[in-house]
Image 1 (cartoon, rainbow, N blue to C red):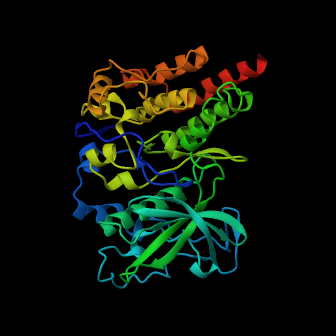
Image 2 (cartoon, rainbow, N blue to C red):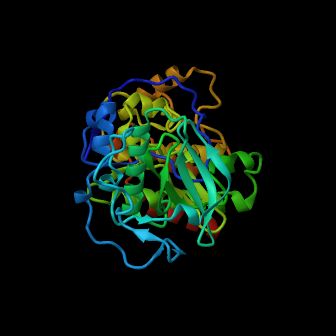
Image 3 (cartoon, one colour):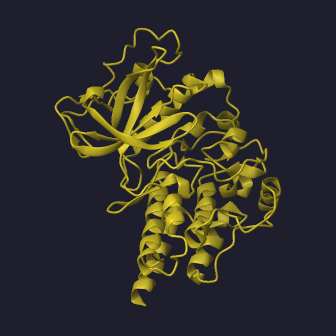
Length: 385
């Protein structure tokens, strides 16, 4: 499946996404044309992103255990949500839109500790449920286009529940909440990753590139492999799921669990320009074919992975060594005259892999399964040394 963008180039600063230590919003399933993804009217967003319950299996998991959490007060299914009518403020029926197999957790069983991150539309809390740490994403009261944001949360919930892969951030369940305006909403409960996002980790370890424990034979290599494995799990589905926003900000890391891809949902209902310039996504990681309004496939994620390798190497955002304006950078990327730079210390095999991922012709880029095999070979050579 291939997609089409609308080709508009962004001008927003590349580093304005708040770190929150949990998932945000970005993935989309293959099989669509880009115009239906990027240019969808806001009035259609809630209806198209919030699929009816008939799209999901009617079975519900037995018991109250999910994702390592066990609690007798956990419920499954959408019966807690009133599907007979929509609230006065909302055009979305949560009970119809949410996969009924997703566990519904009791708000009174949540113990909130501190805020992990805050953005224009959401806030992420560190919380405890059934004695286990978790991350809870809620809408902020000041969020505009509230139906759209709620629709994004539902899309993200359904997507994460469907994926359930060790290299994808795990959904624990959802919590029914009520806004200050009396609107029925949900909060996403996800596994907690104790080191936040990869960008934050890279900033904290600047100047430590020579540190063996965080080098390519250490954590960097592990994170590289884990992200590739996550992409393989997305791209091997039928139809393939294209993340569209692979970058260090959207990779969460943990001292025990390694790296996991997050950010599934919000860009489903964004226009192309919003996706490129919003707090969720920036254009410096975007493949040339997307920028110039050509059809694109899951190979666009492979290009972004190549850019991510430059972040792992330099501990900086792409093109931070350039004084060019954002639009000029994007124009040069779009015509294949500019790519991110690597440090002299970066192993040649890593640079070669990155260049392969960032080739102008998407058909020449390796697929995610090949990426995994190549990275395992590279890491094996590091161990042999």
